[in-house]
Image (tube, rainbow, N blue to C red; front, side, top):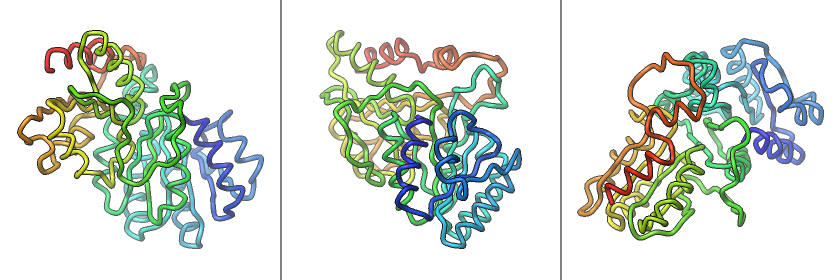
Amino acid sequence: MRTAFVEALVEVARTDPRVWLLTGDLGFSVLEPFAERFPERYVNVGVAEQNMVGIASGLAMAGKVVFTYSIANFATLRCLEQIRNDACYHDLPVKVVAVGAGLTYGSLGYTHHGLEDIPIMRALPRLAVIAPGDPVEAALAVRELVRWPGPAYLRLGKAGEPVVHRDGLAELPASKLILVREGRGPAILATGSMLPTAVDAANQLAGLGVDTAVYSVPWLKPFDAAAVATLARKHSLIHTLEEGQRSGGLGGLVAETPGGASAPRARLVRGGLDDLCLHEVVSQKAGREANGLGVEAIVEALRKGS
């Protein structure tokens, strides 16, 4: 996803001189295409994320569209006050980009996990929240965010995420869910890098006779509550998937939706991590499997619940 992000950013910056990129001393071997093409619009602020958001907000006040870039926990938690007070309070076009969301950096331990970011960033006023499900959605998200008038949070994986939208996807309209796989049984709503896992699980379920729909939910704020209410009337079960804490994330959004979890036929299962700190140093794959986010666990949950 991060490669798709920087390629898309270079493309929009080519025709839009307002676009800037700031990094907190990260992104080496990734951000060079932008830095080499637009050196006057690229700044490595060093390990100083709070300053990075302050600089970005100042540039935004001068009419720029500024993307800040760091690992998920550093891009959000370390400079949360600055995002809130500088970018959100003044409704500025500062786009906070987090790479390595969820358990992507699992092997570096809890200090580098990005598990609480969705509920925290969702709570900030005026801040849009987008978690693309594959590289295609990531590239489209960049184009949407350049047009988005206010602050935003873009939550990315790291590298190697498979392309799900192989037939192409033309746009990523604000708040809209994206149908990835038709199905008349349960429906999986996946956000971020859980989308490929959702598709794999649905394909396995098809072999077991469970016709499962899959929807990508890149926009967590604004959120298409009306579409979710419709799905809750159409499907017997809604299973949300997110690589982050359940509390306040996608599952919480669906539960908060009027009619979303209480429609006559709908039952809600929220897939994600419990309210915990992971003390073990684990790979992303092992961390997912230990918390019910592996394909087999999802298949079993949906097979029993359908």
